Length: 187
Image 1 (tube, rainbow, N blue to C red):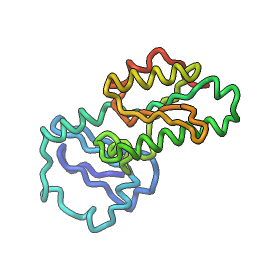
Image 2 (image 1 turned 90 degrees about the vertical axis):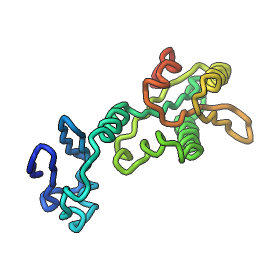
Image 3 (image 1 turned 180 degrees about the vertical axis):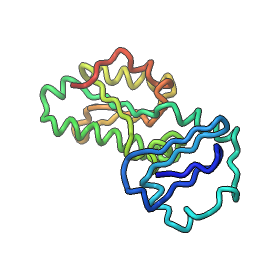
Image 4 (image 1 turned 135 degrees about the vertical axis):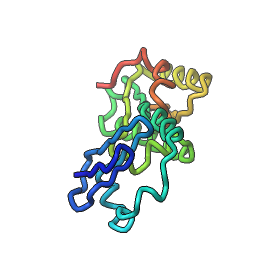
């Protein structure tokens, strides 16, 4: 599938690659190179035939990117259990979708959001869907997130003016996990 010319050179053979979700990861002491086979096939043969000596990677910069990208970006979606028990399931799911999309769109220029929605990560997004008991709990959670500087969208269904759910923008898991550790997974 790939030819390794030296410990620092990686040249894939495009005729052997097919669009898939498999990933190729080559790690060297000096840098990390990660691509999906889908992105390799989209590059075209002209870009694949370029010599890797034209642009030598910066090992320090690549290590910093690798450290930052190794932490999982996650979006938390929190639904209300009282609505799950009384509304049609499709309506509750739709509320979560509204909050998620609104949060992503509101923070579309944020570096974490850009990374989360990038072509390399679009097929491997991480979301955690949790639940709270009712309206007072979701309002309380929203206030705690505001106080902690955690960007999120509290979705308020109109015209009823009912807070139904909330969704954070994508964050590294370690940044936001403490705010959600006491909540139950939505089942």
